[in-house]
Amino acid sequence: GAQRGGRPGGAPAQLRLGSPRPRLRLISLGLTLVMLAFVVRLLQVQAVDASAYAAKANVNRYIPVKLSAERGSITDRDGVNLATTVDAYDITAAPDLLTPRNAKMKDAPRQAAALLAPILGKNEADLEKKLTDNPKSQYVVLARQQTPQVWKQIKDLKNNLDDAAAKGKGTNVLAGVNRESHSKRVYPGGDLAAGILGFVGADGRGAAGIEQQLNKKLAGKDGKRVYAQSGGHQVPTGDVSEKPAVPGSDVELTIDRDIQWAAQSAISDQVKKSQADRGYVVVQDTRTGRLLAMANAPGFDPNDISTTDADALGNAAVSDAYEPGSVSKLMSMAAVLQEGAARWNTQVEVPNRLPRAGRAFADDIDHPTWYLTLNGVLAKSSNIGTILATEQLGKTEKQKNRILYSYLRQFGIGRPTGLGLPGETPGILAKPQDWSPTQGYTIPFGQGLSLNAVQAASVYSTIANGGQRIAPSLVRGTRGPGGDFTPAPAPEKTRVVSPKTAKTLAEMLESVVDNQEGTGTKAKIPGYLVAGKTGTSNRVDPKTGRYHGYTASFAGFAPADKPRLTVYCAVQNPTRGSYFGGQVCGPVYKKVMEFALKSLQVPPTGKQPKRLPVSYSPGQ
Image (cartoon, rainbow, N blue to C red; front, side, top):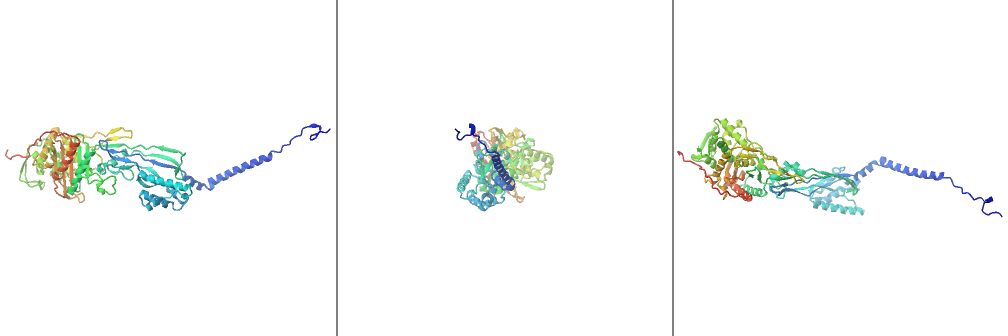
């Protein structure tokens, strides 16, 4: 019978497949539409909406941050910090993030200012002005030198605003507020040695004293950090490039903190007591030329200079030029002895008046004719006796003036001390050919020339050091970031007089303090031999340029027979009590010298003073 469901003859059935072309056309059309969508989007991004996307991209950008170098410390000779650095921050902001477009609100700057003002202690309107003055700016400083605590308050506030914004409650108006590490300069001793140290300005640069003079060494080199930010926050996975800061070097001074304190305390008390304009004390190591103290009164606190009178911000011990008066007689005597024009016991007949150059010269008191040795001329500080002695220096007035001038120059008068401090004066010493007729007679006793306090101290240190002048120094050396110490260059040395002349002068200076006829008896120190000289000079008023008031001074060294220290004191325009150098500065000298000798454990020599004769009997 026939087979069911099959073909005739039993052949298997064949399947017929549909054509693939419709499907391929469909896939191609799909791909074309996708590609078209990409192209359209690309055109939209790159051409149509380019500026809008660029603005958004600008919010998500790379931010450069300055890495401030830590400023080096300034220490005394024992490494005690006189100026150091603590962490502080400059608070900055990006005003462009607070525009209505980016902040999605109109008054973002005002809100940010209102939040920051109480924390920064700034005026709200001032802060708002900074945030709106340049809306395209990506950087503005809102407040400088803020403490870490201030930044923590701002940071906490930013986090709270972030949390609120995440919950859809407003915008973080502090998103663009940031901080830059900017260390703050502090002076642990307050006004101690302020004239030497100076201070650092708001821009972080030294603005006076050592801070200014050695700013480059102290400042180091700032670094830079660049990081990716989005919406005011650093992108955790973003690129960061960093060039580290190089810290500044530490500067070690020759100053002894304790002796500086004693000097400052003594001169401040005396200026107050005398109701004077100002005063200075300089303490110098006679063997090295190093300054152990340089004190000014009135002083200032470099931690807060906003309340200080601008006149008090410098270092008057090097910037004030004034006539030294009788302390200058030591240089005249040095010239006379060294030139062999007289000896310490040369007899000098001193009249009450001496007619020279059309005027009559006098001593500070009227007196009958004095019969003094050259030693007595110095002990009694006689102007007339000094004129008579220096007249022996040359056969002519010109020759005498030329010789005296050469000694004054070698002692350092009329030229810089070598300290290099800002505002330092070299003093005034005219060339001998330019001296007026009277200057030839006034310069020997300290009028008609001017100097600063450090120069005056250096004169006495030169005699104390056996006649060799060592230029004063204030910096022992610097210590780099790696801890390596670089000593300061060796000071210049000059032979001014012979050791024999220096020894004779030291013995003559003993008479000023030890002999009852001397003018410096208030400078006596029990157990120590003291060599010193008083000075009382007419003072040129810096405002009027005319003589008004006095400069009282005292200079000396101890122990006189084996010198270690020179102390020089000057008080400008004392108006209450005495104005004589011995009365005003003698006690200051004693107080400071006594403290310094004990502080440095300098033993008394135990020797008795030479007691060279001050006067002679005429006819003998």
